[in-house]
Length: 268
Image 1 (cartoon, rainbow, N blue to C red):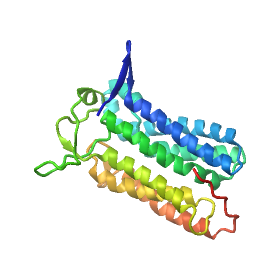
Image 2 (cartoon, rainbow, N blue to C red; image 1 turned 180 degrees about the vertical axis):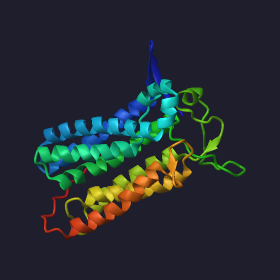
Image 3 (cartoon, rainbow, N blue to C red; image 1 turned 45 degrees about the vertical axis):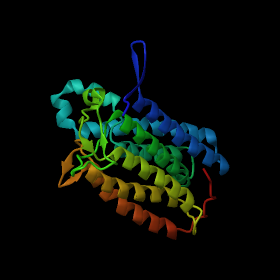
């Protein structure tokens, strides 16, 4: 864990911020490359990418504020920590999708094909962004039981992480950030391979991403140890997965039956 990348005079450059920025740029670049290969307007995709990045940041922080509403109301000084944090990914994803749909309709872009082009980049960017969580110590896992400590467990020791995000120190934890990063990379590889198989249709790659991410996030949530807000035995992210996973199955079935031209395949 290395939360602080380096110091430049009075300023501190945080590893999380650098990797989060890299995650957004990587995701945007993958989408633009794929758009060019389909002959779509790359500039529109650049503008769309900027709109998605801004809305994703706002949505992620907004959902974190909602989930931890009581904490922030009782500790208003921690609102500064909210500005430093990445927030809840699902909040960013949902708002980014809504803004993306509005943008593509406004500019007459093909809605589901645009989603297909963006989905692999989102998965790859997510994998990079979760490495930022690991270096920062946020989104930590639950304590690992058993003696001796398994080789794959992670123990955080940097007091900066404890001060900034509350990371428990000197405790063997599940490396949930690494689990999430690996799942994002695996989804990225699967989406690129899957879209070249079978009968393609507009929306297949996008909704496959929503399905795979929803399932993986639901499972990994059981190994998380940070406060995330629970209701009815499930975390906020698990409840969202419970909604999005069956919705993605329905959308895949519906779109596969529509009489629409199959989109051209675009390699990353």
